[in-house]
Image (tube, rainbow, N blue to C red):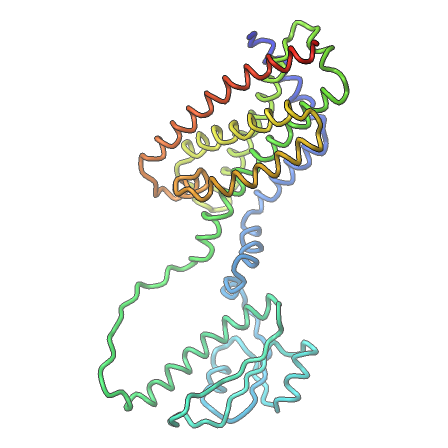
Length: 358
């Protein structure tokens, strides 16, 4: 194989990618999002865990207090998160339906020291992010009210309860899980998925436009042409990954183990690109190849993600610096599989070339 020819094809394909405005716009869109990843975290975390947004809300929400007087009414007013209106239940529910209120609290006439439990009813707007925030803030008030009831009814306890010392809650746990467990692996592997889909278009268009015989007649062999396309699609993966990580670091997201992350992403992305290359060479038609590739990727990802040492899990552990040297063993195994796939692809391209010449 003449590596100079591979370089020429790679350079040509990178130029074609640069001229393809759709691909460039997709990359620029990724970079634009990464530049504002702080806003992205807040927005997506709202869908991942809407209650997490309550820490960022400084608004006072209007709620109606209905039912019998109790210490809960005073607690709601003292919380500083609500504007409390005293009204009857029917009027309050109507105002809630018209979105003039964020919630309605109904308290029964059960005395604080009664034998029966105090059953409080809460009315909120269904499937609403604001309701999730209101529920989270109301929960804190309800917990305080529960502690008040426990103190009042504490003399009923006939034996000392077992004290359980729970560890203090880690601030920002939801964001920690979201950023390192979902956002970073998603952003890191997104360029690999795009490149794997891109090479299918590169190869199938050669067959659909009947340019294969013309290319084979040149000094560049069919195998060199395929490897040039593979190289062009692969090169943009680590470049985008580096930019993603850099922009996340700029936005205040600490990422450890950057070099091992790039090695794992590079090997995994090249495996994915080689797989899509096999699919493209076999089907030689864009729609069929893309469909088979997309379906196979979903099936393979489900199988791979079920393994404890899958690439996505390793990226998470590497990014927080909580992985041992075992990730090098995984990387070595992936590299061995990659080498076998490269040999197999080289032989398959020769077979396809002979078929095209017949």
